[in-house]
Length: 120
Image (cartoon, rainbow, N blue to C red; front, side, top):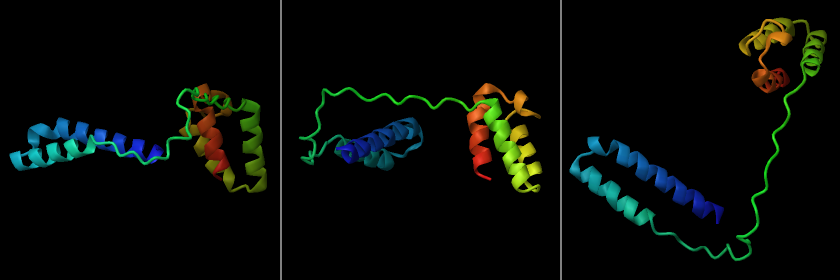
């Protein structure tokens, strides 16, 4: 079922893209796009949807909380202590995320900074 939905959404995006670009298409191209759009509107029943209850609510995914400044500071210290060559990399990562010190990094960038530090 998901594959069919993905294919349907892909075709819809392609139709929208073609509609936006429609002004630049020659008549033969426009006819080909319209034919593709017409054939894409047909949904194929794969028969694998019988087991999926349609009335179940979609499960909400809770956002992961941003790391604390202490957690980031500890990560930086561990990286530098493990290998002194990491010090310029750590400083560059902090700077790339909006600060010269961890305390200067904006709250919204802290998760990205943690991911960058974990990549070392």
